[in-house]
Image (cartoon, rainbow, N blue to C red; front, side, top):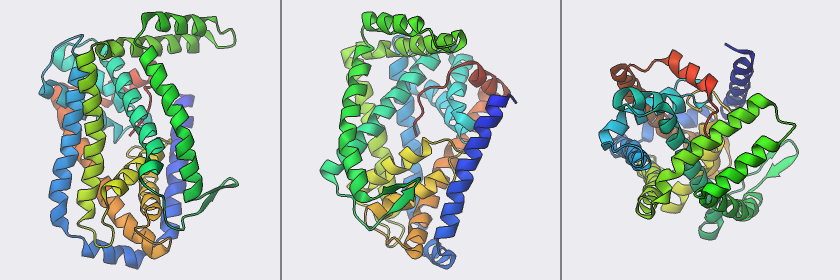
Amino acid sequence: MTTKKKITTAVAAIVSIAFLILIFRSIDFAALVRSFKSIEWIWLLPFTLMTWLVFYWRAIRWKLLLLPSKELTVWQCFGPTMVGFGFNSILPARAGEFARPLALGKSCGVPYGTGLSTVVVERILDALMLVGLFALLPFFFEFQGDFQYEFKGIVITPDLLTRLARKTSYLVAVLFAGSVAMLSIRFQRFVLRIVNAMPLIPRGIRQKLNDLFLSAAEGFLALRNPRLLVLILIHTVGIWWLNAASFQVMSFGVPGAQLTVAQSFVFLVVTAMLVALPSVPGYWGLYEVGGWMALVLCGIVDNTPEGYSLALSLTLVVHFVQWILPTAIGLYYAGRIHVSVSETEAAAAKDVPPVTSP
């Protein structure tokens, strides 16, 4: 293990441990046990099915992104998709993103660079959705509750989050404009000239930036086709909507923690933003804090140890299913396609990681 990887792993572990300590210092264990005993586990069945469908829709979107390079079936994309998410659940620094193009290359003969470029575009699309949803939430939903948390002198309150979300709309506009500009060959060449002209950036880093940018440019090929672009955008929205809807369905089985449609999107956005931080594989700790923070902001549970415990019971169930399902299916397909952890880590060490998102 390189020094850089050791430092990255240590930082991720520290972040996760800090969040886990925050959780276990804040909850009422007796209330947590009572909440688990009251769960109607029958709702786990539709939630698990919807979680599986989220990954199936992701495979459809990947198929569409790959169309300019090679026409594949959804099932040909599904296995490598699950390999990627499965390895993300057990490897640090989202190394599973590199397992996806490796698996696709072995199973379907798609060049590694082509597969990686489409993964980069997927991450850009998901990042746009996350930031866009955060910016839109205050216009359709009012953060509630008496939530207040101080972090390095900054007091985080519902009002602060509302103002921050509204200002995020400017960032959405910039990201959207940049994504549209990426469709232009002239813009791509212009950016590359700027990167190569920067004197203070070491040559190795500059080369990695060039490679990352060229990968993203290749991945944007599918978006130049208006029909494909519409289909890809529809599936991107569908993936996030189905994910939020699955949270609402599971909440029906947790007395006192039922979510509305808007509240399920708050749950999705808050947890997704937190798991974007460095953490151990599986995002343990960060996801749990995001879940109870979301339910307090929605006014569903009180800002008390008992309220945290109720929120945590729902969050743990949701998180465990979203971890165990891709892990089990992903490792199964990794065995069938013969993708190993060692070659995935080697690919991750060589390439620049894609834009991260849940």
